[in-house]
Image (cartoon, rainbow, N blue to C red; front, side):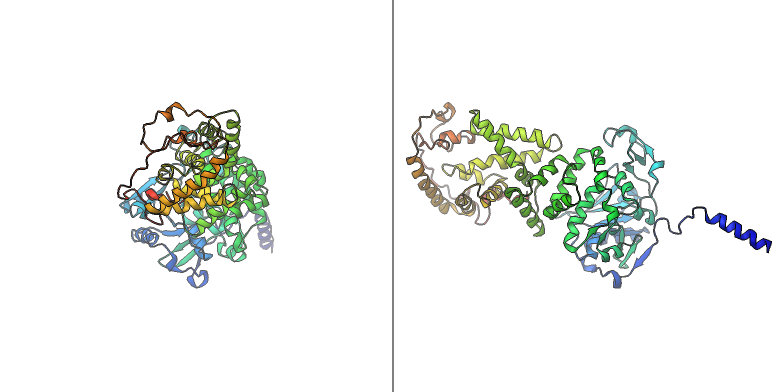
Length: 534
């Protein structure tokens, strides 16, 4: 009896202590094909080859993340990632074309095919779930503290944001360190089972997006998860998905953490929001979740102008192209978003008496400085945007060799698509867009007819306009006879674009040289592709 009494006391004392859960990182559940319903025919064969190679070498390997989520929901995955217990060095040794990339998160890119037909399968090693409070801490971020991070495998900054995470661990810990339950499932194409540790399949049936663990802590570990939450709910909103209230609650108060994320990464994440085929839905979710302002300055401009006719047309067109499987270029979309700034700046410079082209160039420089800065505004993105904008006044010129030189430009289709959107909202004449559409796909003889048509259309305008005395720039006057059209920046002077004044002299039309420079019907001259197809 006394022994029983002592046993009861001991059991009560022990019950007050914190018990370790039986499965601290989630219980492994293997879901058969009869339950999850994933069609194996939807799995990329190259991803299957990577999994099979790793498994034949004695490693665990699964397709993981967004591809599993999308196949489970009946969507077409954009890409296929693989997770394995092999280290990056072991993975690299198994494939002829494999490259270890990244310092923050070391992964392997296994490349299949060459040229435009190539595909990259991203292979990551299972990572351990570590308490970030015990991680090594450095000041600054992954750029400013690069020297301090050298040699560290797991490090955070002063806010708890993970700067480096390269400690390998078992699969259950890897699943726990992922963000949403829908992204923490593993699919084995050989056995066709789905491994689920955090009730991802159950959440898929409930149409719920739920963060694994404490949402506020997870946002602090990586603030970009705030943007990912918006992107996922925007993508799945059409299927009826919503953010779990506990997952959504800390979003606004955690938004300030994004200030510590490098600007280059923020710029890339902004583009993902706008170029995954759900730009309109993304903006709706940003407003709904209270994140319409403060994520990223350029994104604020997009949200602010999303209801204007031109930007709305550009966002709608981008969503359409993605759904049709056509590529899109960030330069085109950003050129549309910032066109309002360029136009207003151009008008201010013209009002000061500047010539048209220098005024436009100055306006563009001002927009880059104010809106984009040094993140991507001085590279290829800026060059493409500038070319699109500079083309716009040249579309008004349909005489001389201007049309021929325009359609020969690499970015002609992007510039034309931009002008086409302007015509759709009434900013330029619809007839002008139709003329360029036909000219860009016509043969040599039809182009001559279109040029004659343009000259006839311009005659009434030149007759009705008062012949203002305007001095032709010395450079234009000095151009040798028969040299073709004048320089683009002098075209408005030579052709009287601003005043309607007739040209000072005629030039002899060159005879065709056998049609060697013509574009085939249905394709712009020079093989120029639609916007984003470069």
